[in-house]
Image (cartoon, rainbow, N blue to C red; front, side, top):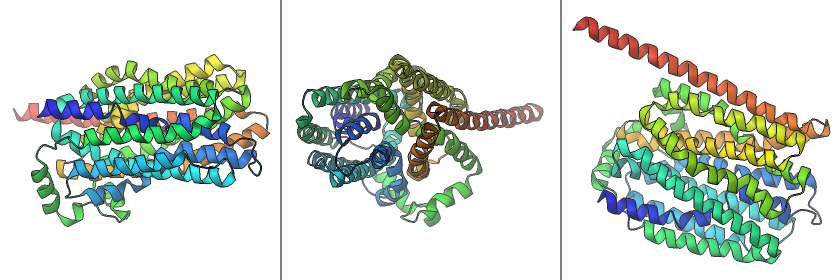
Amino acid sequence: MLRANYGRELLSWAFLPVMLGVIEGGTVSIVVKKHFAGLPGIGETPLNFAVAAVTAAPAMANIFSFAWAGLAHGRSKVPFIAGLQFATAALVLLLGFAPQSLLGMILFASGVILARVCWSGVVTIRTSVWRANYPHADRARIAGKMATVQAMVLAGTGFAAGWALDASPRAFIVIFPAAAVLGLVGTAIYRRVRLRGQRRLARAERNGRREERPTLNPMSVVQVLRDDPAYRRYMAWMMVFGLGNLMLFAPLAISIEDRLGVSYAEGILATAVIPLLAMPIAIPLWARLLSTRHVIEFRSLHGWSFVTASVLLFAASGAASYPLYCLATACLGIGFAGGVLAWNLGHHDFAPDHRDGHYMGVHVTLTGLRGIAAPFLAVGLYQWFTRMGIGPAFFLICTAANLVGIGGFIAMARERRRIASRGEESTNHAT
């Protein structure tokens, strides 16, 4: 059963990322920046904030994950996930019909955000399927393989979309419907996945204490954080660290277009394809590390990849160097590779089985909170720095936030080792 489920799920991820590829942050930010540029009624500031909105969409949509965790509680998980995949495909299809105007830009950005809202439910609930279907020792490796397939398909989709738009701007109306159709193929395959112990899991969720059940009330997030001090501290440092990461992406797309005037293909290559292609190389290494370390220790090591990337973006923007931009985004890809594993699996180191979806919902919701603030704050700061003539210095702010977050993870890891050491000493004395 494990092999059959794994085969179906892996095959579905050969199709579903095509649908995601056209709304992936690096790709869609370049599409918005170029497709709606220079039109009547669209100035530089509205355009840049539209770029911020679509770049923020994946993280911004996560604010709704507590609601998805509540709606899926006690229900069959696979059909619920498939329904969200179908809704995402329908929204992606409609994006291709957005007119090339100010209203069209607003509708397009809104459609991307709504599609990501639906997809945030898939991400939130999918971890419950993985936890039920795959042994703990294999989970990081399996998640890594699925992430590798997704990264390769996303990269191919982004580059194909850029090439098609460079060849003809009219390809805009074809790309999104075609991606939606392939997403529906992936959804049909995913519906055949079976969840091991579905009835037992649903019964455990329904019979759990009322105060432990996820609800549509956003205050349920506060309850989890109040009840689990270790998870609360972890989420606090993730807020700082993640803010630095999420502030990078919108200014990256704006900077590379404004300073170099890249084509669709060149922009998407740097912002989406290169980081996505770096992920399959790094994922196996990060998966082995995560399999042997608590997520706190993992984050204290993994975070340095984002520090390196932000420093390189500072250098690339200052020198207006396309190769340096590409090197910086390759480092981002290495960071994403570890981040996607820790983001999907890290809460397992804190959550009891019957509250897995709830803990994941908390993590995804808090990601959404910083996702709402970070890109708009970043664009505002970047434009202010640019008017002062020191635009590249913006990326050093992201570096500082990353360093503070890593310091928090290191402190937590040291405290955890001290507690473990005292526990071992007490055991030795007792024996």
